[in-house]
Length: 429
Ligand SMILES: *Cc1c(COP(=O)(O)O)cnc(C)c1O
Image (cartoon, rainbow, N blue to C red; front, side):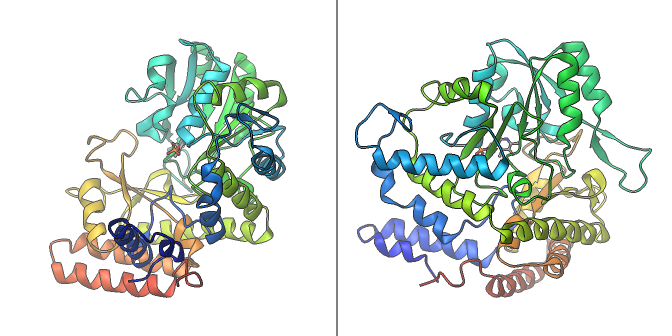
């Protein structure tokens, strides 16, 4: 069993140390295909584990409520400067503890309670914070939802797409104060321009939630929403490959309101160790190697989707333009639920998550779909060829799910692949 060099610093807690060693083992001997996950660099992890965790810094650089923030101010300014440069934005807030916090802060900054927001419905690919009844967002604001529409006129990629006529109709009918573009389970490219046009037509503000695709935007393979949206919110830990956290970009005119909504509106002291790690990640994402990485993520996902389709899975939206593939399992096996598929694949060392497909007849806990992503294993160095192999291994494990020795065989092939593509090869002590 390997372990991270950092674990050696935990000298007084054998219980936790052993848990960390087991998780290290899990992450480096099974395939990480959860679309929202990635392998952060050792530099990102080192900054997250740094001395900055000790510092209270309520407020913003130059306007703190505690003393001793001279250096922390420089750290946060470095992160903000790198982030505005990376996306060409006017203002950045790097304090949100998560993507969900960032989204709620944006609503809080731009809207009054009860105002109408037009966003994508959860079961169609939207996020909980886009107005799901289970989310606090739906209790404060009035959400109207758009979804995806099957495109029978498209033969190249028949499947579910955001239907801008539908978005426009809803916008004209409900006059939202804010339109939210962006999704959590949608594999097509989201063009910010038609959203901007619709927002302008009805006098709405536009927020682009690029939680999933922030890294693809930074790498130049997806269009940058910054010139189109009033606000762009995202997570730093998905394709952007930074520490767990959120960030917000906005036009200067909204800067004060956004900052006030994050602190003191919603959060207390910022996590300056995470902000330092965000600064590391923003720098990494500005390097030419990151553009190559972003391109490889998409190439791998496309090879993966093609190979999965060849195994008999129906690909929601007919293909992928980003890092994720959403599978409708019903064509592959009408009896197989997302829940069972996820559990079988877990036994085979393939980590995925069940996901509802558009108009899923099964509940969110059971589902008829599975979501997979290429970002993490691309970081580990895998290419198209490996993703084709993974598609075949997934299919085999699911078809032979009642055969223990078949699952075992897949598990051992997975272990061999993971050994060959360890993201922390040069980091293991
Ligand atoms: C992941 C995600 C979020 C929330 O991020 P957390 O860090 O999990 O809170 C928000 N919006 C979208 C579209 C996401 O995919």
